Image (cartoon, rainbow, N blue to C red):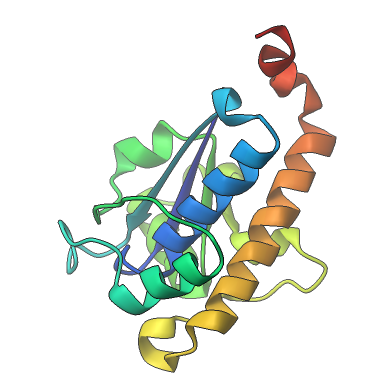
Length: 161
C-alpha cells in the first residue's frame, strides 16, 4: 500500500483537486486497493471547509467528483505518508519547516514528475482554475507513471486480489 498526501496552502483548491484527480486516475487503472490518498493544507485558515466552489465546478466539468473537508497537515501526517506532493515552492518550504528539514526524501513538488517541472499557480489568486486543473492532472499522471515504473512491485497486491 502506498500512501500519498497532496499539499497546498488552504486545502480547498489545488490539493483537494489533486487528491480527487489522482483517486480517479488510480480507480481507472484498477489500483485503488494499492493506495491511501489524502490532502492537506499548510495553513489552518480553511480547516473544516469543503472544496472551493470554482474548483469543484472545474473538477465536475472534467468528470471528477468526490467529497473533501480541509485539514491542516501535521508532522504525524508527514511521517505516516510515503509521498508528500506539494503544489509550489512555498508549500515545499512550509512542509520542510514543519519537519525541521527531516523527511525531505519523501517531499516533492507535484509537477517535478512532469516533462515541464513547475509550480502549480494558486487559482485562489490567479482565478485560472482550468490552468490549475491541467497542471495538476499533468503532475498526477507523471507521478502515477513514475510509481508504475519505479515501484511496480508495490502493485502486486492488486494482481492477487
